[in-house]
Amino acid sequence: MALVEMVEVATDKVDTEIPATHSGILKQILAEKGQVVKVGAVIAIIETEADTSVQPNAKPIQEKPVEKKTPETQPPVEVKSNPVSTTTVSKSAKGKFFSPLVLNIARQENISMTELELIQGTGKDGRITKSDILQFIELRKSGKLSPPEVQQEVVKDETKEMPAKDPVKEELKESVKPATSLSGNVEIIEMDRMRKMISERMLESKRISPHVTSFVEADVTNIVYWRNRMKNDFMEREGAALTLTPIFIEAVARALKDYPMVNISVEGDKIIRKKDINIGMAVALPSGNLIVPVIKNADQLNLIGLTKQVNELARKARNNKLTPDDLANGTYSVSNVGSFGNLMGTPIIMQPQCAILALGAVIKKPAVIETDQGDTIGIRHMMFLSHSYDHRVIDGSLGGMFVRRVADYLESFDLNRKVF
Image (cartoon, rainbow, N blue to C red; front, top):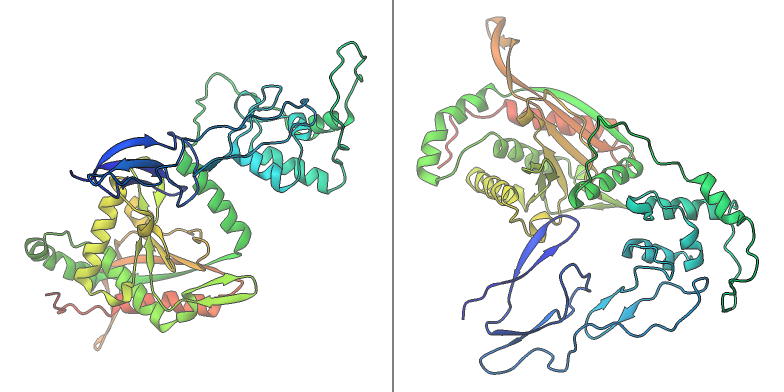
């Protein structure tokens, strides 16, 4: 029997098709579509030809009966089963929906179901979002709110007179912003999963790293002429398109070897200098989102190797075929904003990296050319390099010298270079 795709796993970065580990007959499914499972958990049982199945005693995921409690004292319940663990209670006794993320935050912050039910959600159909519960936590920590006292289980007596107002609930109402009123001449678009993650990561990066950007203009005329002369032979011999991107990445890798303190990350008050030079390159997806696959050990690849890596990762990104390994362990990133016709940009650092380089559009412009006979003006192919770096650990001198070194490597490119 041939191995076939069993499931498609969705992470915060990429969707990955997972093939079966053995050939055989699928006898039992232990995790349903859309369910969150632990890494390493058994999700299905396959009967092989030798009739040896994985964990024959494994049982499908079932919810354990939950003790009946009054709405005021019922906490979020985590139901565990063999072999997959998942949160199964997503609604309160009052029918209010809570996402697994909200329930997880509530457990970590010791927020009772009573308090959760009092929060006014700003999400769809009044659902509580991550920002709603985090705002509630901030209010409580600031002393404006105090957690209600633990109540004993009491059978609700509908004949008793209820308090006119709940002070905690009233204060929450005042703290939550009202829903934005929109006219009919707008379109409301729900962010997809990747866009939500990009949004969170970009906000996190700007909060963590004080960004500084240095700019250098580079003359890449020799590279343009050389590439135009070589691209047809390269396609014929290697079956791949020769673009400018791998040449730029080669220069970045060389500069990182010259300035290893740019190839770093930060953990607390410690600087982690990376010996591997793994360069991520931002790729635009058909959906409009960006993803950053990584060229591992870029400094050890020749131009042919870099070209094939760049083309292959770009192809896999466009076809949604990237694996988690393709996105892991980047130490420095490059974003080609010139592909959108932009002269320059101020890119945001990919955490936990500490720097990123934006490559501007290559354009023809008049420039001063220094010759032995004196200065002259000629038409040159010029581009801007924009280097954003974390000012906690990379000062202006280092950040500026690094991007200048990249430009030097580009400008000194040998027109007579042999690629084969």
